Amino acid sequence: MNVLRIKSWGLTINKEEPFLVSGPCSAETRTQVLDSCRHLAKYGVSLLRAGIWKPRTRPNSFEGVGAKGLPWIKEAGEITGLPVTVEVAKASHVEAALNANIDVLWIGARTTVNPFAVQEIADSLRGVDIPVMIKNPVSPDLELWIGAIERLYLAGIHKLAAIHRGFSVSKSTPYRNQPKWEIPIELRRRIFGLEVICDPSHICGKRSLLQGVAQKALDLNFDGLMLETHINPDKALSDALQQVTPEGLNVLMDSLVIREMTTDDPEYWNKLEELRQVIDQLDAEIIELLRNRMEVASEIGRYKKINNIKILDMERWRHIFATRMSMSKEANLSEDFANGLLQAIHKESIKKQTEVMNLKDL
Image (tube, rainbow, N blue to C red; front, top):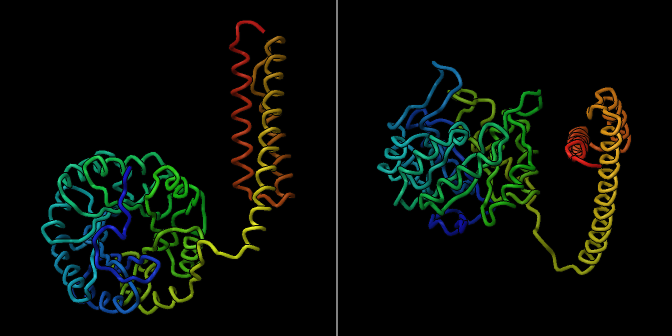
């Protein structure tokens, strides 16, 4: 994909870094939108946002003011001299947003998860030159995210960016949506040149966690932030707990450390190269150990086949899992990492034994 970076979108934006998208979760009234955005314009915001149509989990929740809010956010952009963006979830939203001369569109997580909805939006944008930002799907499914980006790209939309807003998971975590940083990192590896903006508001779900997530996003070299702001967050009609005042946003942004991508210091590069060589050697040793382990797993498979024994021994697997997790804890490895590693090794071991079982001759 030849994706165009944000600086090539032709927008008149503040030059401060990082690229900052901010505004109310929902446009509620003209006064609320204008007051919020006037304050934001003083604090280095690059792109003003407001939710016009709000997909909600339950009926009878505030689902946005609809198209009548489009002139409010557009007026805010004209007053401040900043471009504006709204979320679209279907073709009729796209048509209304284009008629209102909205500068940038974004596709929300609940829409990204539905290929039919994304394709409807993509079809409605054929022949239109407008930037589109695509949030990750609600579920931790990288292929769905990539598929949504591809649908827009194939429709001729090349001014694209992704928004990482976290993923819904069943287990309890401090976050509203689990960050799962490895997924947006893999997205950037898979689609070269695609810029990814982090949305700490939806990851955190509460103000107290915003600074930590925003800092980690910048440390991981994300290309910008989307942070929800409201002139009076506690009175917001949606997502009150995760919104900050414009002044609160300014305090948050001032607290962030913007690190350099590189340095000319030869001492740094010499030490980094030394450490990288250690990593390369350790990786080679790990891969060799895994190769040896899988050879032993195959030999176990052969022995079981000769003796007509089933592959999976759950008692043995429970013992391995419990003892190795204990070893991992003592080695100061995170529980999530150790669990994933053991599951992957066990899966490959079962695969090796199954391959041996299926051989006609030993």
